[in-house]
Length: 345
Ligand SMILES: C[S@@+](CC[C@H](N)C(=O)[O-])C[C@H]1O[C@@H](n2cnc3c(N)ncnc32)[C@H](O)[C@@H]1O
Image (cartoon, rainbow, N blue to C red):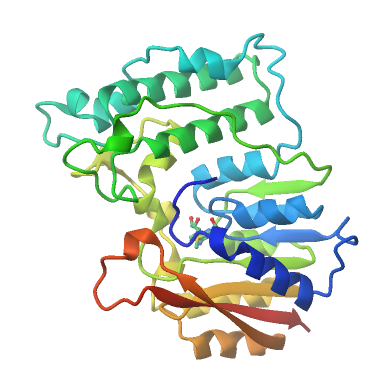
């Protein structure tokens, strides 16, 4: 996914690949059959780049929109043909008029007029188009007119397209008062890239604490949240578009209830214990953890936990800050990104 996502490893991917291939001593032409796991998959950028190298991929994230995106990037290996549907859904959607539904009724000014909170996340036209597209995708799937690959693929394309026209500064924790330029464009559904590789995969949507107990493989990559900012609140809109489950929402920004997705990795008092649980129970020989120098765990805290379970090494890379964090007090333009590496005993 191209979106600007907190903690995305898009600009660090070459560094990660190089170090992981190096520490795990993998040769470029000997990737077949290796199981690579991306435990906090987010946009899927890491998993998909190891898929591209020919490895089998396990992917997991607690957020459902991330599951959908990874189900597409990792799980779909062939370009969908929409045989049962009988027409090109992209052409159809890009000529549609839209329909009033959950997004229109709750997240655009026209639909929320006169209500306690008027919300301005999308133009009315785009809100209606999101509703129609999402409803059609669901209906086609229920009627078996599209298969699972086509279903997750189309929802992924919708998430990406909706994100491009969202009227936010960067994340969905707030909307802008006036519709910004990019949000004025009509939503444009474009076919996302498909990685055509003959690999095996398993895509999950569980808290890592549970997922780690049921998973095994060769390489485990962990990229947890670094600070107190919960992904469930920052990306609530993507969750609702992906699930389209008519949730009860509340407050100025129309948040959905998220107690099940509240992450212990965002809590200073719980995070070290969480890390230890994951490292201890991991059935993987090589474990890599991305973390930065501004995270709620210190370098030493992470090292102390990991060292207990095998041979430990630390790699570093300077990294340009995520755009949404630019205005925060005290911060430099660069952070140091750590890659903690462990060869498990
Ligand atoms: C730093 S981001 C990962 C970014 C990803 N590597 C990328 O490049 O897009 C952290 C991810 O962890 C997920 N997450 C947070 N707590 C989790 C938990 N307890 N179990 C599983 N996933 C969790 C979030 O939803 C978020 O997508």
